[in-house]
Image (cartoon, rainbow, N blue to C red; front, side):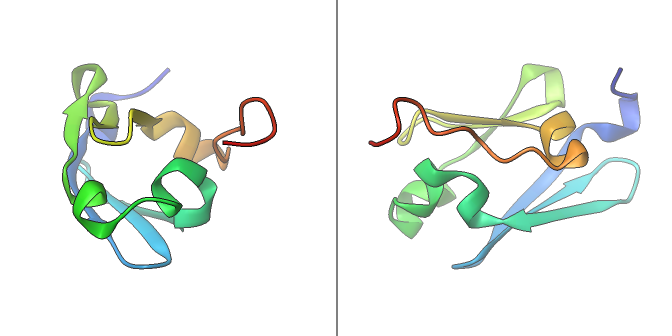
Length: 85
């Protein structure tokens, strides 16, 4: 069960890393490749994100990608659907 402090405060990305600042002061960083959708899109599309799921997730409307804080904390990369895009 997520705690209130595990809500998203800010999101940053480099060419290789997705970093999420949480309200409790922690920063979670995972390889951008963990989200095959985000890793295959432009930096402009990656910059267009919104806080979602009551603060416990991030949504990229241009890419139709959702990433939850719990999945990042648990170390679960996004599964590829259908084996290819």
